Each structure stands twice: as structure tokens, then as C-alpha cells.
Image (cartoon, rainbow over all chains, first blue to last red; front, side, top):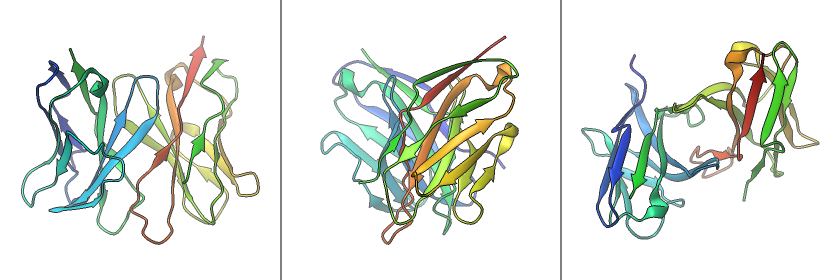
Length: 114
Length: 116
């Protein structure tokens, strides 16, 4: 059973460009969480999604950030008009249905904004 | 709101010595508690978790942690560390109360540096 997959592993963008981060959960998992890790800090919750639904986006910045988890395909975290402060590692975690407290993390996408 | 404090940002220790990484959380009626390990440039791996039951929890790689409700602590211990234990360790909490979405609240992390 393959683990949580994230791509790309490294992403470089210039200020003002868009960044798209993808997360494929483990097989059979329908719950996805996104976390952001700024340099020298712990992980901060951003958003929690189930298939086709955003359940909790209390950690998402109000502007430029959006997330989706379509019926088919990976979950996408989208950052529009990136700024240097968006440089961070973005981790995705997935969870089996009905077992909310067993999260499996992907290797992360390291975003660098020039 | 729930919060987690890891009291030590760095813990240097010699190989084969015991180690304790401290974690305290803000009070709540009930919580789920976790320790994760992150090796350089990798994702997080679950070491152990406390959901209910026995307050002493055993995890992978010889680690264990003790849930102390009165002190709101969940310290991680290992009796004898190896060089390969050098990594970043994160304590996390989840609130299983009504409306819980399972989101994890993380501490700042503790860097364990094992020296030969």
C-alpha cells in the first residue's frame, strides 16, 4: 500500500506566480489535511477536506490560498500571486474514513519564492 | 484554543544515554496526544499516540511516553538513544470534542542531537 504522495517535492516560483501543490492520499483514505511548516517552526493546520467538500478551512489565509479535493484525482493546494512569505514546506496528511486521529503524512512540498 | 508547548528547542545527548523530550498542552476535558519524528527533508512519522486507556504508551524505535492529566504533560522518553535517533520531534494534540475535525495542533519541535 503506497503511502501519501506529494508532488512536486520542490517548487520554485517567482513573486506573483501561481503555485499548485498536489497530494494523493493513501488508498482507501478519503480525508485530507494540509499543514504548513515555516522555517524553524512547527506545523500549522491549514485546511481539512473530504471528497468534494471543504470541512474546516480555519487555518487558511483569507486571500490567495484555496484547496480542493475532487471526486477523482489528487487534492490540490493552490497559492495565487505568491510572495516570499509563502516560502515553506507544505505537508499533506490523509486519514481513513471515520478514524479521525490516525493521520499519515506525505514527504512534503518545499516551496521557494524568489 | 488548544496549544502545545515543547519546552526544549534542542536536546544534545550522548549515544546510549537516556533522553526525555518534554511536552505540555493547554488544559482540556479530554485530548488525544501524539509524538511524531521528522528526519531531514522528510515527512512526519508517527512514533506513538495516546487516545485512552493506559497512561504509559509504547511506540516504535524503543520510545515511550506517559500521559499525565494533572500536569497536562506528555513527555517522550527513550532509555538508550542511537545516532540514528537524531531528528526533529514534534508533540501534537487533537481535541476529540464535538465538532472535532481531527486537525492536529503541533508544538514548536525539539531537535534531538545524538553525539557519539
